[in-house]
Each structure stands twice: as C-alpha cells, then as structure tokens.
Image (cartoon, rainbow, N blue to C red; front, side):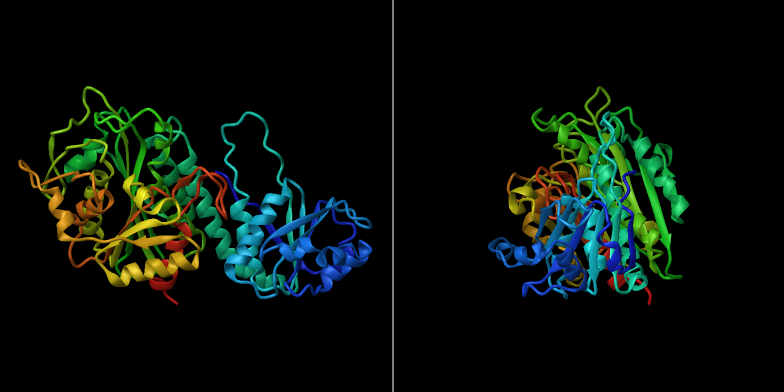
Length: 489
C-alpha cells in the first residue's frame, strides 16, 4: 500500500535553520510581516526574503500559494520556499499551502517554519494528500521521499491534532490505491484479501462467497458476475467502537472491471473501467480511517465485489432475475449492472444490521457526469436530515456534492411488461432513474442517501489535493459525517 509521508513536529530551533539541508519553508501573511523564523531566514539571506516580500511577484500571490527562492546565500538549503499565508488561515487555505509544498518538495527534505501559525496540522494534511503517487507497476525505482519536519511552538499539541488527520490521509491513500489498480491485479479475490488484512487494525471482516450469496437469495448480484471467471463476493467490515446501539451503514459498488457484459461498451475509454469499484474503494477507505483513529462509533461497511464480463454464461438482455427482497427485475441493459449489485447488498444490510442510517456509493451513471461534471457527486436521498448532514460534512472537507431530485414520475420509467420492474428507463434523467431503482430496495423508515461518484472518483487532471487519477473523494466527508453525527463524546 502507498503510505503518506511521515511528518514530524518539533520545537522551534532558530540556530538549526542555517545548516538545514533540502528546502526551508517560511510563511508570510498579506501584511508582509515576518515571524521569528522568517526573520532568521531574512538575516541569513542578507534580506533577500524581505526583498521578495516587497516585490510585485509576492503581491500577485494568492493565499496558500508558494514560491521557491533558489540557492539562498548564507544557508545550506537548496531553496527557501515562501508561502503566502496569514497567521490564522482558513482550513482550505492551509490545506492548499500544504499541497503546494508537496508539489515543490521533489524528493528534498522540507523544514517548515510554522512557528505559531494556526492550523499547522491542516497544512500537514494537505502536504500528505498531494504527495500521493501511484508507482506500483513502474520498473524504474521511485525517487526517495525526503523528510518533512514542522518547527512549531507547541509540537505536542500540533502532533495530537494531526494524528486523526494522518488516519484520514491513510484512508484516502487506501482508496486511491484500490481505485488506481488494474483489473488483472485487483481481482475480486485480491480485493477481498486486502480488506481482510484490515482485521489487524481491529476491524471485523467477513467474506461471503458465492454459495452463501446464493442461499441468501442475492440473485441480482450474482447475475452480474456469472459471465466472469472471477467469483462474486460480499465483504462485510464492522467497526464496533460505540457501544450497543445499531450501526450506521456504508454500502459500496465494487465492480472490479466493467465491460458492459453482453451490452458491450464501446472500446474507446473502456480501460478506465478499472475504477468502477470506486464506491467500494471509498467504503474501504472510510472503514480504515475509523479503525486507525479508533472512532467511538458503530459503523458497518459492505461491498459487493464482482466483474461484469461477456461470455456464454453471461446474463442476457431480456433475462428476468429475482432479488433478495423478492422483486423480479427484467434486465434490459447489462451495462446498468451497478444498481443490480447494490440492490441485494442494500437489502441484506437492512435485514441483518437494522442500521440507523445508510449511504451507498457507486460510480453508477455517465448521466451524473453530464449533469455535474467532475466538481460534484450527485446525492439522492429520502431524508432531508441525512442529506443536509452529508452536504455540511462535504463542504467542510472541500468535497463537492449536489442534491438531485427523486419523484414518482421518474420511478414510472422502470415499469416492465413482464416483471416487477426494469433495470433501466429512458435515456433522459438516467441518473435519477438509477436512484429511483435503488430506492425500491430501501425500507421507508431507513434514512438513506445514494452518492453517484462517477464524476469524482477518478479524474484526468490534478485536483487541489490529488494528482490525476483516483481522488479518494468521499473518505474525508464521510469520516467527518460519522464524527459529527454518530460518534460518542
């Protein structure tokens, strides 16, 4: 697994600055005032720092921007990095500053003179998240990562505040690794094994194999994978940190590769369907985070792991299957498979765990990308309270989400001539119709939300806190949702 950079916090030692190798980082606010660390650097560099702060280049910088000053006279460092950031920055600006430092680091050691700056722990989170690279399958040796040391006035307090954020970073990295892996590596067997390994963190992990799924009646889930040689599985992860109360539930779509089945996708871009297990990846990352930070909450995470392939045994358009709930489904399009995976797992989750609330995550529809692009995930919910809490948590973490409608008019599109429902409706409103399908497998008294993350799970351009590829979207927001609403004390 890719691991975040190890970040250390120590007392301010002005005399150690001159001999520090690598890059030395100073923070200067909009007012241009220099703190003790910056003043020391200014003295060592014969006022080069002050000259830069007085320049037009510094004036044009936005909050959180960073600029390197190469090979400073009077210092052993290869560069002094100037970050424009006030003493009391916003969380977003602090994380942005950290991300800028990660991009500038380039394998060098970083000595970050944070002093008394507020939210130093958020700077460290931004640095850790943007420092992610996925180089598992490159044969050239990876560049050695440099050390990262924060000099702060109260290192113990900052380290304590940074500890749960380090757990978040590891959860995000876990999700990104899973989502970036090619399908010949991340098979359903391998995926399940990686989740089972989290038992060492204190999670309870149970793997339900095909024979058990068949006895449970999960026929819609099994129908998706029957054309593949890879066995279909459901993995149940439980974190019991809250006492006797019923758990909150997370459910993820884990299609490790999606060809579309008999309703075969177009070849162009099909290689991107390695990320079609992104929903399951997020669930796994959240569960890892909860275990690492010892969350005082009860949470279950269930993922349906399957591969959608065409073969002589694959499900055909026009086939009718019965769900675990008992409803029959006419499968019109085998490429609308994610909702079939989730239908059975959602129902099983409610029957077994009686959750206080439930969120499912899935790279479910291209239609949500048409509607919202890559800036927001689509949120559909039967609960104003839950949807408001999700939106609040997502906004606090800088992860975009936008509530979409549900309604009887959309639901009518699922009417089938020969079965209880179809798995698709018309072309228009496809993301909403998919959500309506899922809602049929949610009990009326269960607060539920469906997050369609097709546009946010993996992107072709870098984001503020991630390089191109898997983003880990949702791990931070859902961790905050649980901390703010379902955690004791």
